[in-house]
Image (cartoon, rainbow, N blue to C red; front, side, top):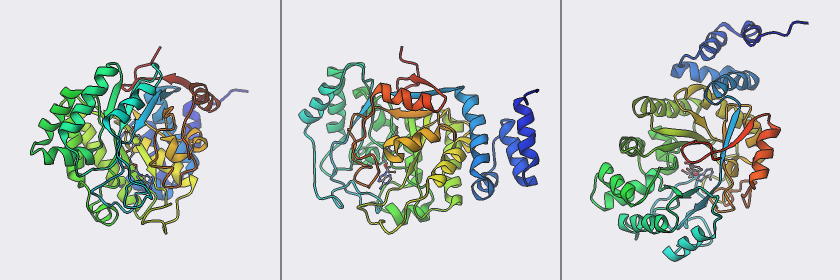
Length: 373
Ligand code: V47
């Protein structure tokens, strides 16, 4: 029996679709960018199976069968925050406890990590008494102890606050931090760019245009960054596509984003607790459409502490090529919001097993997606 070639399978699938979906699918398969209306059509009309198939085309084109992971840990220096985001379960406004780590406590956490850990992710709340010199000095001290550690630090929201407070523009503030040891910028604080939704869920924090301006400035200085989206709350599919479109446009100009990370909204212990969490099918649709729409992003990351390790494994068949990291039980943002991973930590062998069970080749990476040998 002759087995069908890849293109034959595409043809069989295309014939079973409505003309609109067949047209959009053909564009995806032949590597063309989708318009916002076409992205929306996928969210509204495509079956999860079709989305998985189309996302897989992009995933394979960018990464072959490799799925990446990193040995990393987080430091969340404080939960004391000037903002009051309604989805947040982490800040002191909604949590039973208030904390602020001293510099020595942070350095002790750095010292505790094994030598093989390559990345530190620092993010947390926007503390009113901290300033750019504090965060700059922290970077210098970390780098003195562990010069080889890649420090991905301070979301655009934290950066916005500290840079404005210093009376600097984004470029000079980021340049100062880069000179202190900042290596890249994490993707937090993006939430949803649509201004109406943003006002309702996190009206006090950095606006969308400023979030994008900070990432643009970082890219222009040679600092790579990530991008996120908080989905599954009051936003519509059109808002999600608008968010992806703004990211795709900035990436077109700068090429500075490494990865896009959809973040599922978790509803425990925050002011949006009445909103039910979306289904896992919805999660997989979100990952797949992200892979398909963001055709100029090299990587789509499943942040498993937010998604759960089982669904992160499934997401490898819905466009995901990056599993983030080993984490070492160092983040509270999602466990406080009710995510099933209450103490997120994975061993390297656990990570490899998860990836290989999904039929992918597990590759340990550094923060710039170079294989760690
Ligand atoms: O911006 C907060 C999200 C983000 C909730 O760059 C919530 O590699 C769900 O951006 N339910 C911060 N999500 C974390 C972040 C991140 C995480 C992992 C990797 C990277 C990276 C960046 O956490 C916030 C917000 O969108 N968040 N509360 C919640 N209740």
